[in-house]
Amino acid sequence: MIRADHPLVGENLSTEHYEQLKHVNVLPPGRMRAGLFQALEQHGLRRQVAVSVTHFLAVPELIAVTDYCATLPRLICQHLSRDQRLRIVPAPVDLGTFPVEMGWHVRYRDDPAHRWFRSLILETAQTLSDSQTASL
Image (cartoon, rainbow, N blue to C red; front, side, top):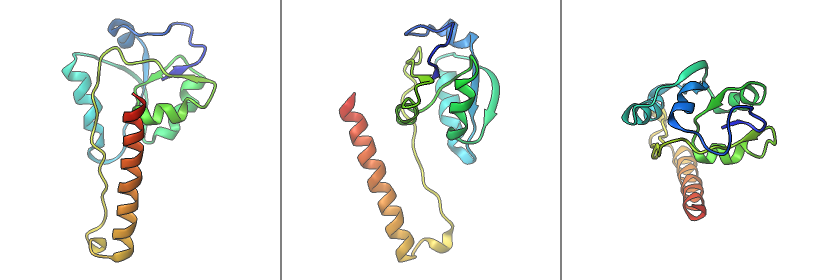
């Protein structure tokens, strides 16, 4: 994702151009951070990280007012692209998909309300995943 009027990026990015850009890095807590790092490493891509944030919702404002870019999951890009200041540009390589995990305290493992809520989250995530697959 880049700002809509980014002066250096057209419709596509080469690997060289991708590596030259300054990046906003999303480092969520826990193990989730491994996926993108591993995918970039497998493709031999390096990023110049300008700033790291802990949540995806911190990214749009940083991107909208700088020449930075961010490598984000497709569903998040689609949601954020409603902001006319932003634009989606495909990554120069296929970075694949990454697992999404839920975590909860052991004391809630058998709690009926918590089980119901987890099943609701799972059902919603599956619906989003199915709709994304259908739109490809």
